[in-house]
Length: 132
Image 1 (cartoon, rainbow, N blue to C red):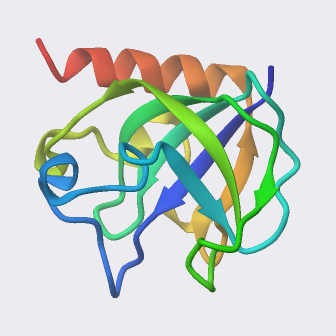
Image 2: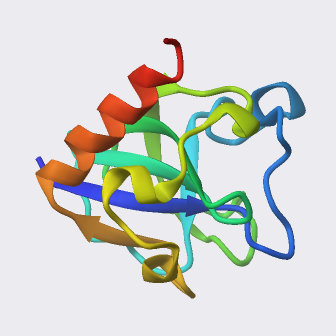
């Protein structure tokens, strides 16, 4: 299993604070997109990063190989199916990216980056701490 930090939204077009209620392709149809074919496989983990908010808002498992889809937004033609494992439905409550030991600038102009297992562990700990 490989772990990745996967960005969603941009500084200019951030996710809605109540992103689940606002509707998200992460929920229905349960996919996340990429500009190019990602090098990931079924079973990999994605730490979900809200770019405009600079916070971590969930962890998902990749449940399909990458697909080039005709019905995808033009900017994000490649996608993988995901199962959401842990999420914070209100971004104002989500932990900052620094809580997992990664600087926000690491994601500049990137749709995703590979991260170390310790970053995934720290993300899970930070997300669990939201409920305390």
